[in-house]
Image: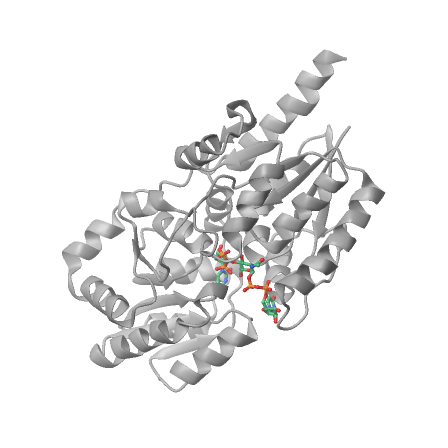
Length: 375
Ligand code: UD1
Ligand code: UDP
């Protein structure tokens, strides 16, 4: 029996590891331990409940306004303890959060091989996104197996001298979960339905990145200007639970009646909201991959993106944190239906929806077939 351990702790890692956990659970020759660090509490609990995943371990790490140093310190001791107790054959981590890096580093310290899901994304600027770029680069050094969503991601890894035979291009598991949720009948809050049905064009906004905390006001000012300049435009903004984000949002746009500030939506509802929206404005990583899958143009309020495939395809546009540029580009898509239709028609470059299956097949091949053949 192969013993794997999946470690995750934030909302996006949870969403994107759901299909991997499901696929591992289907394999009779694999026993998977689920470790939730709970770096996020409510926002990840929503995801686990929706997909009925009950972690074997819940480290309950989150504290309000946690610093990266505190988080790292608490995580490394607790994760290492569990790895020592369970002695897995392989640890799987996802993406680029503090949980991801510490999960991989703890496995390395305990000499357990690491598989990195969503490997090879790079901006090549270690300060943007902060600290995610350095987290994923460090996990790239530690990991023995790299599941890259795209060829570009694989090429990034090859340039870092990662051995080709340890990389598999498998698409992004976010598409697996997106397809799964799109096929389910899901509840949608009637109060949100009413907002969507009021005849206005709806922009779905999210904003949370640490490196944007000092400049987020500009994004909100652009949004405020849009809703005042165009009476047929409204905004729905599910606010991240980070208290710093909440304060800036409330201070800047809390009083604007055409900007609906709401609690984070449960994943299935968020996907429906994205589907009903006209346009998405975001600094999120995952949403850059999902929105094109639903035919929604995305303005990315960041200076860099580790998803250049979307920019090259034309489905994402980088607008940074400049009030003027965000206003101008959003206004263009609101008023120019040709430009809008062109951007909305582009095909999603991030996968076909069978990434988790490919990941588990690869693990089976390495650990169950090739190693067994050596015995
Ligand atoms: C983290 C990740 C980031 C990812 C983001 C997804 C790191 C360094 N950052 O950033 O890569 O894009 O998650 O959302 O790993 N909070 C709650 N309830 C929750 C979640 C968060 O109250 O369910 C509040 C807490 O006060 C917490 C704060 O938000 O201290 C920040 O959470 P944290 O995980 O440290 O950083 P994020 O900005 O969420
Ligand atoms: N999401 C959600 N509810 C919301 C906002 C976002 O379920 O109210 C989902 C979204 O569909 C995507 C993920 O959360 O899959 C993105 O998370 P976030 O933006 O927090 O992190 P990032 O992707 O930037 O790391």
